[in-house]
Image 1: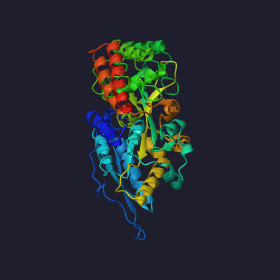
Image 2: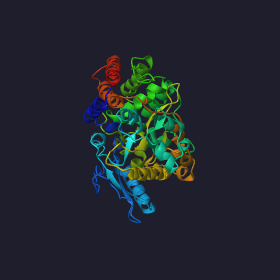
Image 3: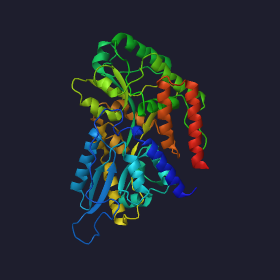
Length: 448
């Protein structure tokens, strides 16, 4: 298939779906305010840096990200620290509103106006590589002294296409469950170490939260009823029950399965029993407002919860309902978009910056995310952060969407179908049939 055709296809998908409500750490369900878009001093589509003729002059590069609220502040601080330390490179940082990010980035990529470095979710790498939009990083990484083996195995695998690295992960971010410790203490369900342990297995899960509903007199679980959260929950359950969205080659959808029906049935059982009541516009606000005693949300919500006066909480790994240890996850990665206006010197500077960020993800972990590097995960800097020891091991069984083309379309389709099911507009069988048919059409469009 021609590159132009693919680029137009991916751009069209991005324009329709905006993709951002699937961006776990980019503002979604945490309830955090969106940080205003900032403008770089130079045009990222032009040659961005020095020519190397003036002693002491730094190479200027640009960096785009969709981070808002607390995670945006943390990344801004990291960029400032890098700029202070680096003798060779200066980074101009641009935060783009999350709902516009992928549309703007993809448009810039296809018009030679992309930044030197950009954030890209790991589940979208394959599509961008197929469209010839990303620079391979093996040679640049070797020259910069990157140790790929220090990244977790799952991230190493997902960062490669045809055995070439195209991104440098900075985290694993995943679905968690958060509990109001005052409420669970009062119910006698708080462990002596301050944690909450939900028993394994589907039956035990429902028994536990029915007890929470009866004894608390409050909403047992909050979680926004549309967009990202239902998809994160659905994919967690689907993979815990042993299913997935397609075959390894990305050619055949596998959503007409017993495993998917089980996942959808479990969601509706949660809704119908009012363990997770429907029609929730903002699950995070229900939790911080003490309307719900627990909430389903990602690690990215921890800064928001920590900043809520009077809220005492603990964050835990998502419970195990099925037979397979699994939880929905994604990863923010750093990429160098292809751009004929960017020089080799600027690419080298971009790699210097990328390596520095991945080496310093202990600071990025303040956002709630799990560092991408094993050496950082075992550091005291990371271990000293609250709650991390409760869920850090989840990175070892975290489940990304398969590295295939069509993830953008899958996300949009899943948002729509799950929202309709949860709202009572269609039944489980219709939802499953629609998911299978529509995702197969998406995969066929890439494999024709």
